[in-house]
Length: 348
Image 1: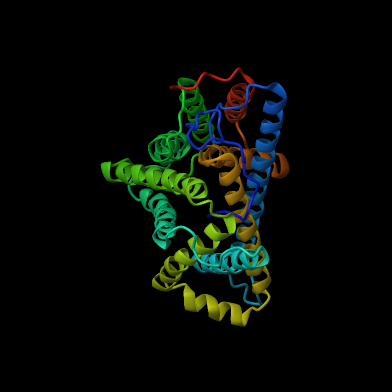
Image 2: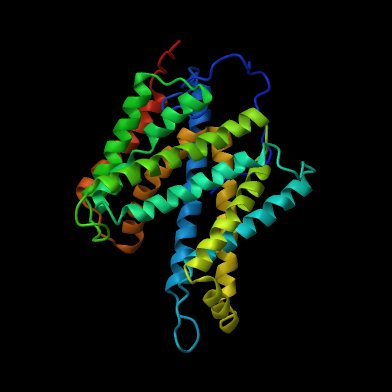
């Protein structure tokens, strides 16, 4: 999913100075001035709260529409790929509305091929995540998913020239270990293969590659082409609509879904509500990637599942083990330490 519109940019930054871990997106990079550091952390906490909040609302609405019986027969809406299609269409319309409202260029600012690459990468990461469970166990997949930060750092270095120091990698490894511990010390789902295979590991490596490439390349387009969030959002979704349409038709969900909605028009309310929340989520994601960077986005994405599970345990009395609480505290402890400790000197 993806970004938003125009945002104030730093006007006085030299284009020849390399971006280090102090710049946006670094794991431990915060300005040396304590007052500036506090303001930066406050902005990051606000971004993280918005991002996690919209994911929580989206998950709730998605579960509601997929489990709520409609009509006297109690039919269930099962066409998840059609929901994705409607989300893409809704996000495209909203993005073009803001392009028109802000008098921004209606054409694609970067080459369309760049947006197509992001769309392919985004869709491929989702496909890999689903397909991998046919070849590896769920715990193994969980460990891979918790390791998103390191690939993003590698891509940031290779594609955008970002500089990270040893402290940044230590923080990333500590967060990865904490998230993996959280996932593996709770209830383990029965989904997935019975044992791991080389094919499954290769698919998950491809997943990490696509997942790291997507936000890193998006952040690069913001910097290189000075494109707005709305321009990226409009054209990435345009490129993604054909994928969603083909998946919904080949999966046998498209026409049954249209028939279901014709028979149960009240379901349109939830479909539209989900599309609105998904669009808001894309706006926030683009905002976060443009302002905070790809690594920050990936970090929040890694820990949001922990936050969701802990909140669920508080609200609905779901079981969370002591080890999971300790893992959560360790992750947030590492992140707080990395933000408020003295900044490391960047590599030359």
